[in-house]
Length: 588
Image (cartoon, rainbow, N blue to C red):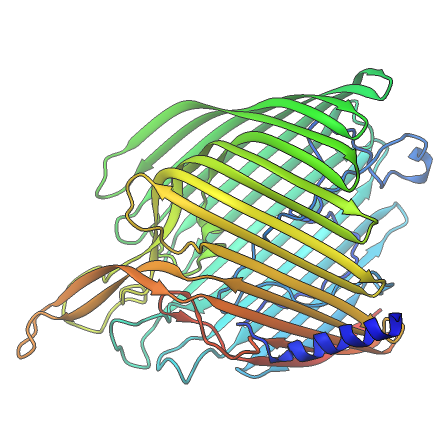
């Protein structure tokens, strides 16, 4: 019976090869000895007794533990032509820690990855990461340049001291691409559409083995520049304080937590209106938690002391200082592992930065008015569980009241001069940030199923409905988005397969029709806006395979956008068609 299931599972993955996706960022995932990614595994900072799993041997008697946070129901996948979801298979097998990977494919695609690390005698680990991906773009779809390139260089250090663990990361990220999404004009093929960003960041974290008052300290810094002389500096320092087991009796315990965070953000743009903004926020997140077996009640708050300033050439200087308070309450009733009921409410304040917005939409104009987004409250209820360690699920529904929600709105041309000799951003091919207050209703769910030891199936879905106070349309937000994945291994884990599908419904965008003011003797352009342009939904299916020929040598193949549909991430910006990339990987 098991053999039949294995054969059917393998056929399922094979048939899926008629599927589809744009360029994805194929970073190889290994079981590195790195600080885990925040979105997948993060140390709890709120009233859960946390035992860390990395003290030195002489500290192992000091009980500490790690708490695992489930992956959000919908991943923050990105779908621009140079960025995307990782589709390389990740399996729990004994990879060597160091590797070099190189591959090539159609559309002039070049892929390179490397990870090198070593452990010194002083229980200090040092290492470096390199990633490179480039394509020649859509030469048959656009007359002008649509090339894109991305590269990341990183170094890290993990040090195990007497009282805790230090993690330090230094990263440099380069993106070189073009504003190629021109639909309203027809410039010459040699037009310059270049945009380029450089980002340098340093992140440090010191995690104490014992949670006696001091829990951990985190530092984050970032500096970004772009081709048009925009500059952005961002920094944050956070201290988490904890006092656990203030009272403990008959499986009941009382914990307390206090988070203190200082963050600053300064952005200056040199184009057009020359927007400038600066923010300073000090936040306190006190919380008290009551535990009874696996059930708990958490009561806390999020208090922000925000100081902000905005100005530009067309707007006077705006300054404001305010205190923003949000509740933070959660209750979980866990009669058994299979069924856990939970409900709660929370609020938050997010400082929107140019660097973060570029991750979601790289085609922004280099002149953005930045405002913080305040979630006044988000109510939610849900059910989750783990059935026989073979099926994990999490379903929930929520309702939010949010001020200054951010959306991407298309720009027209910035002058009406009748000429095609224009700047890279002046062809109605860029986007700006707009804001509105409103409500969001959502339903989301995630399921992970392990029918066989060597087969892992997963699915995530998110439904979001917006109701805004001022805007008549919700720009560039789908009603439904979903991801489905599978990982399968065979031949004693020498042959590994991966599958990932991304499904997104239609979105609404604004667009522009640009025409001469006089057909016979034109002297200027006339721009007419359409507020309900439909950007079609898409199904984006991807496959990956890797075969280990030797313990130090493997070959791999990646298939992206296998349905060969050149859908648009944003209006005007098509993605690459079907891509096949093959290469080799050396591990040591």
